[in-house]
Length: 167
Image 1: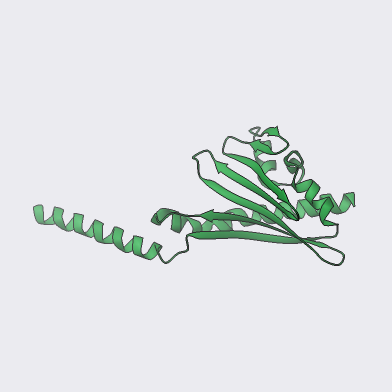
Image 2: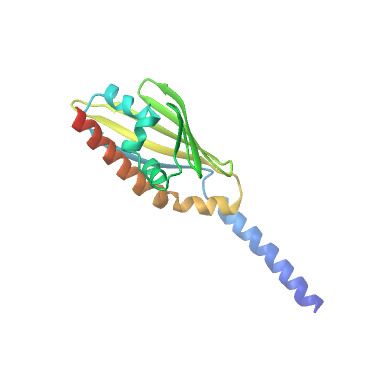
């Protein structure tokens, strides 16, 4: 009986070490990014993005939270749901930086970068995740693109329609 118990303990430790070693091959920094071309000047787009009150019109994450009646707009630069809080960190040049804090305390950075073209502006939206060494965090990061990507794409398309119809 003791031999079986030792075998189980040793196997569990070896399995944990193996999974941890495999997770170390995954990056500690993950970026999920989407972009869209909008036929409008950067100033017009920055105005929409830098006012969190306007996010209800185009941002899919906020629209979903609002449909569940959990959205609280605290100020022009903050909004909060039962799951997440968003703070406008900085508007500088053609960049809008935000913090997304989950209720469990986990912080993600989400930025918008605008690159002017000839008759359009490229709007890139990305989330940055800085992960610790924990295997479950590293393996969970594999699905971030599938979770966030479709909502980011839909949000950027909503932003494009909103800005271009006002232009």
